[in-house]
Every structure is written in structure tokens, then in C-alpha cells.
Image 1: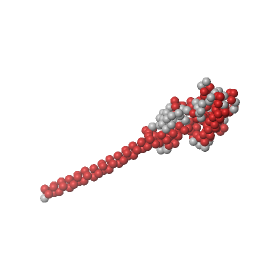
Image 2: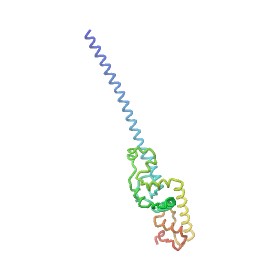
Image 3: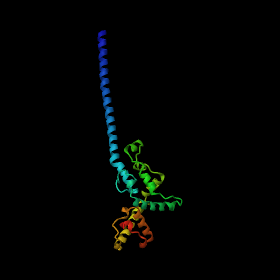
Image 4: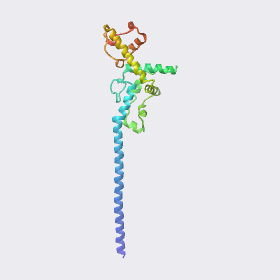
Length: 220
């Protein structure tokens, strides 16, 4: 009887052990599946960040802070389209001063410093738990740069800038057609360098051809 009792206990213990091993394996497999699912989800999130979200952020940033190349990726101030940016800043500063007479002009130097503030990385976005494109866009922006950026994205910003740059282009191209003897090259306002856009903007204000320095366009 005692022997049978021992055998029964051993049998029950074996069954319990087998069950524990089985259910333990089930739990292990379940946890592993969850882990793999999470890792796959994070992997997809990183891929989406790298291939979709961050390029989209840089496209929006470089609309407001135009660069000559690398429109959808991080580039330093070396690539800044200074002519176009200077014109944008002139329009913005004039707008800002109408609302605050003590406003200090936002400068190209400040824009360069912002562009050199560092790359927006996937780790930066994830580590800081940034959930919106706007939050990501603000990376490295000072209050003054952010104010300009918000203005650019408003109805007072891009639509006004787009028309202004178009009007400057028309002004220049009409001048080129009407005075072919000046041998001005074909270009638009957005493709002009800093000296060229400054000269065109001065001409736009004064309308005086005699004060227009063609050498900055022709190199002669």
C-alpha cells in the first residue's frame, strides 16, 4: 500500500512537472511572440521615421529655410539659398515691425546657426517621445526662429512670399526683355544669389535703371 502511494505521488508529481513545463513553454512562446511583435513594430516605426516622417519634416523646414539641395534631408548652412532666404527675411521683418516697433530684424546669421544646430535623428524622435510632425520640426529652433517658422506656415507667410518672389521675377524678366543690350542672363528671383536679390529689390523700390548694377548679374 505504501509502495502504491509512493508510485501515485510520483505519478502526480510527474504530471504536475510535465504540465508546468508545457504551460511554461506556452508562456515563453507567448512572451517571445509579444517581444518579436514589439520589435517588429519598433523596426517598422524606425523605418517609417527614416523613410517617411523625417524627410517630410525636412521638406517643410526647407520650404521656410530654402536650401540649394538636400531638400528632404539634413544639410548645414553651407547649402542655404541666401538670396531667397534674405528676401523672405525682409518680408517677415517688415511684417513683424508693423506689429512690434521694437522688433529686431531676424538675420541670416540666426538662420545659419539654426541650420547648423544638428540633425533630426530617429533616436532623437523616439527618445523624446515626439508624436507629431510639428513637435519634430521644432528641433533646434530658438523662439525667434520658431516665430518666423510659424509665420511662414500662416496665411501671412508663404502666400505673400510666393507672390512677392513671383513679382520680383516678372520685374527682372521684363527688364531683361526690354533692355536686351544689358545682356542679363535668364533667371528667377528664387535662383538669385544674395547680391543679385539685393540689387533687384533695390531696383523694385526705386525703379531707377541708372542705379541698377548689372555687373552682379553678368559678371562684367
